[in-house]
Length: 575
Image 1 (cartoon, rainbow, N blue to C red):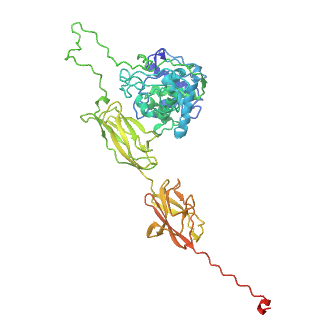
Image 2: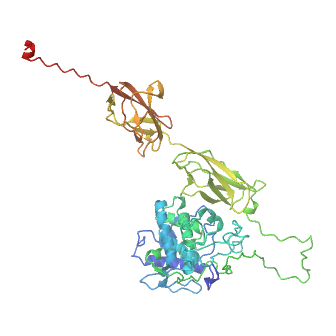
Image 3: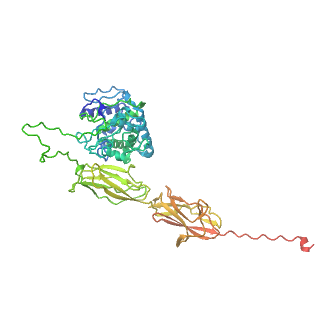
């Protein structure tokens, strides 16, 4: 967010009041007594009074580090005359606000389409990305982007130095924001570098995750809003997601107002022709630098000099050095486990235990309000709830950060969850988690028909079995089928029934079998060699379930020889 933001108005009670007025006006534009918008969803007015509206995400500071945002509100679109704004309140924009720059609009829609495939249960509307993009950067400063979606000039929030803003010391060595002292929000969706490090996405398939590219930033914002299993068609979850982006009730009201406005209709406009908002939530703060030049370290205004006191001599060893105020993060000496139980889950299931990590000083005192990042490492497809492999959580008053629940994938074995402190170099804490294979404790045939075959022929019926575990269907369970020598000898038989491989050769052991979603396995067709007798097929699964099936091979039926023809009369007389 740069100097081009233009004229400022001071944020205060008036801003909050006009937000309430606009939300109320939006509600009033519906039929009397209505509680949902045009799309059947709860309106912004309902969200304002809802107790769920106060919910927040687990990452204090959210995607933007609670950086400033635009407070301009959309047109009321009401048949009733709009209330006149009072002195000092934001000016409501005209109908041109419905226009969204072409590349920016395409980025929002493409991101929503991708989320509809990868996280269908989230129900992310592209209009929500547009609402956040409007509030965060005025749609990338009116669509001031190249054809591939990269901002022509950097969009940076103010340095988060604790001087009127949150205090977030540098986490990216200035890679994204050009500031190696403090972090700054970056790009069209205003991600702080520490959040982009795990939330960043490649939305335009160029192999780079760039927060200054609107395709990348929009896709990252979509995944950020869809974490934690939120369903954005549910008002409470929608509120949680927005507040997790920037933890402010005014921010929630503003985004919901634009969301409702964009849902009523938008149109595409050329890049670079969009309207840039005028008012920000930090109207009493100085403009941030509009370039990627590192911001200067903060300075503290000095008191007027006392003529009776000589000035301090910086070369005098007795002169105390000036040091920046210490943050909670600065006091962290180490991380400790906070009673995490053994982490084990069956493939495809949720872990029942969560990781708890405590931040402490060197003296062992708990440190609150510290950002702890949990990262899944190792060869695994396990994720945190919501499908992410990284989660950042702020320690509570007891200094404890509890990671989101883990969800096991299909890969079995051990993996590690690494806990680190964001913004401070202390030793990481590793947690081992184990994914075990799916199991079954019972196998039964789905048919009672006897399995018989004539020697040299093929069995008419294929063997089908069903696996269960604790009386529940056991899907995706590994199994093996072997034609054994006898009920007491489980070694593979060298005669009797057999399966055929792809080349038509006889096979008497099948591996790599897996039950389907209904717990069923249907074995290939069985054939018999020329040896009659009773044989056994044994099927076993992970978890120890075993079933032995009898197979009967009968000898071919004997046929009576045809009687010799009687000699003719001439033959019997020798004539």
